[in-house]
View 1: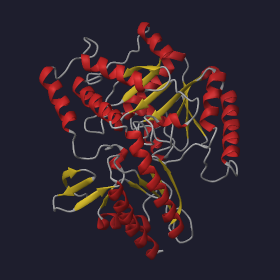
View 2: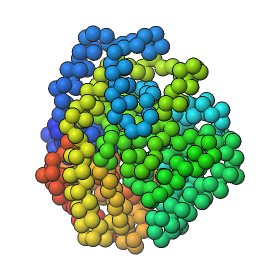
View 3: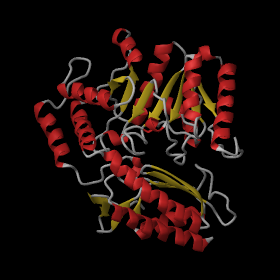
View 4: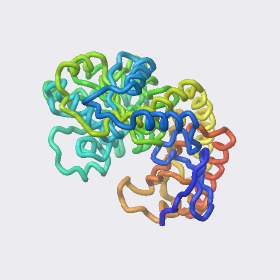
Amino acid sequence: SLPRMVRGEGVYLYDSTGKQYMDMTSQAVCTNMGYTLDESVKQAVMKQMSELPYAYPGLGMVEIRARLCSLLAEITPGDINGFLFPLGGSEANEGAIRIARQYTGKVKIMSAMRSYHGGTTGPLAATGDFRTRFAGEQPGFVKIFNPHALRFSTGASDEEAAQQALKMLEEQMICEGPETIAAVLLETIVGANGVFLHPSGYLEGVRALCDKYKILLILDEVMCGFWRTGPLFAFQHFRGVVPDILTSAKGLTSSILPLGMIGLRQGIKDHFEKAPLGWGATYANHPVLLACAYEVVRKNCQVELEKKVAKIEAIMLEEVDQLIRKYRCVSQGRVIGAFGCLDLVNKDGIPLNLLGEPLPKEALLVKESMVKQGLFGLFRSPMMHICPPLVITQEELKEMFRRIRGVLDDLDAAL
């Protein structure tokens, strides 16, 4: 039943019948630059393929790897100066977990209940949503409560929620034993589970607890990194917070080619200059992929993408607010940068389903209506993500919300 896509242009995709779709979620929140490939990116990739299509990273250094590392070290906040480049987000988080364990000599990884970190064994074990069950029993992973819980309140205000969640986290650290905990692994902005922003003071408090108990902080920005929320990295929204290990992917190359990133603070980088990491991969640090990433990042710095995302955010905040006010089926919504989500409910005001459950008729109706309205995207009921490509124009963004209103009209009518 999936459409057969044959062409893309700007923020639009076209199937084999000629039907046009507007990409409302950048597919898996990854096609940040849309579907019209910048000529300079194409030329950079072709140039690297012509000059040196491959070099095993353990045998030789290539210029493009040094240039990308230098560029990222220059623009990434704090002393995150060491970079590794696996093939994607899951592998980046897998590497981050291994680095944390080897650097600290400790095993446990604490991660949130509402989270997703990737499909390989380690990141899937760290995942908190239903998909973690596919990893089976994996030792060394400990789940913590998010400040935003499903079935109870941690406080009436952001400040109360943050303080309560931090008290629970510290209690758990003490009970687990700080001497056994290698790292706390969190999404800077909870992504696939609903674009949840940590309440004011929470991430700052987690950073302080990690410092207090000598635990590393890993921030997963596979989805929210590379200008998705406005600044280069989402942790820049939180004053004084710099992770010890940073992971990302998706927007690094706009998913034109597969590539992930692990960023390390200087002290950890220095440690592994002498101590073996024991992590080698045939396609890691691949020069052709690095050439793509370098040009995508360079171009986005050049056009001051953060300013463009700020304009997208202003429109999205206004439009999402109107949707919440108008539709019965929308209980609440959240937006930061070009990263947004609506929570959809049934006639009783209850979420359409729990994530991972079979889709109810209302959710199937939403999927059908999206196709009818010419919307293409990742719908994970009961959440409707709204994360357009960052190249979207203001006129296109307003057209996208017109189409979304058509979907919500259909759902409201069915309730």
